[in-house]
Length: 174
Image 1 (cartoon, rainbow, N blue to C red):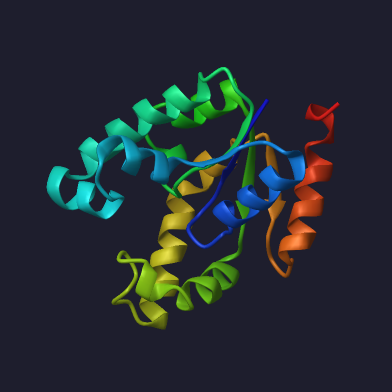
Image 2 (cartoon, rainbow, N blue to C red; image 1 turned 90 degrees about the vertical axis):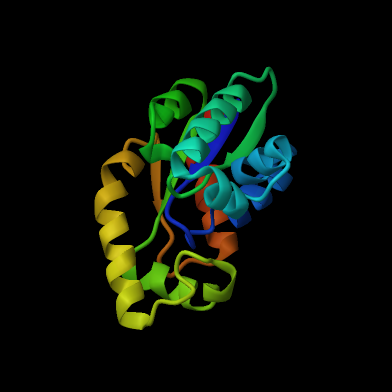
């Protein structure tokens, strides 16, 4: 079985996916890392040199490639991945998907601590960040909520989330 964790940036997709892969003894793969390896270039560099349309086409191609692999794994995808092409349909057809859902205040609080690592939001003040996140969550919610399972991240530790995700996946782990 493949398990895909999705959600907005700062929701903990990669962190929870790594912990889940350790707990389930399955490999973890991050879609952005996979793209960077295949393209021999960072995601930021791809955006700068090739543009977003090229990136989204490659993202969709590599997502399908991973999902059709004959192996079990835990996959974390970028915040925009479910929103382009037919990616959400692919994710749900070939995996069990989990949306790590955070409220605007939770996401903003997490992102404030990571702004220097995230070029999209590095220059935003707190008010601009809140508006940016609210707009994106509004636009992306319909895609995210197509996930098989939705788990709120608000007020939860990594251990809490890992327990909840594992319990949610029990039906697939029999």
